[in-house]
Length: 146
Image (cartoon, rainbow, N blue to C red; front, side, top):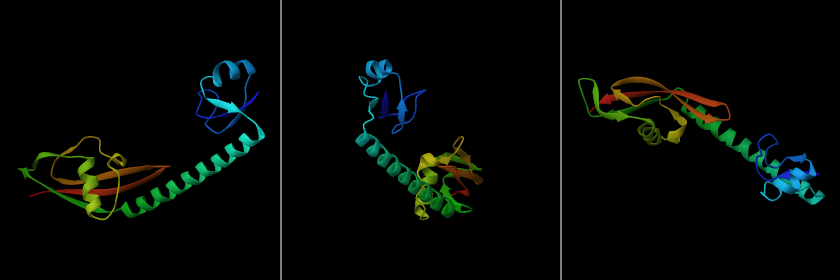
């Protein structure tokens, strides 16, 4: 029996794909769980359209990620914080770096900024941002004392 996957099913396929499954598996498990629908000609056409839309959305996201990475690559961002003898009174993490980037005119989500552990001292640090779709950018953060 042919079915269209409504969501990703482990060891079977990804959402939107048309698969051939045994009728017992389809009728007794996949259909009652709402994981598939029967592959009628109309449903197949709609699934193909949905896959094309999803592919276009992913391409748009990849272009946006590439544009942001190009803006960010090689930038230097300065963060000022209270410090004594080279040690900060707090720490600087991805949230503070994202805020500093936003003030510099580059919007980057904090979850994209890779910081292994928060910085607790003044200095210059190389940082990397991962935007998904294989897009990365490196930039520098300079932490100064107030």
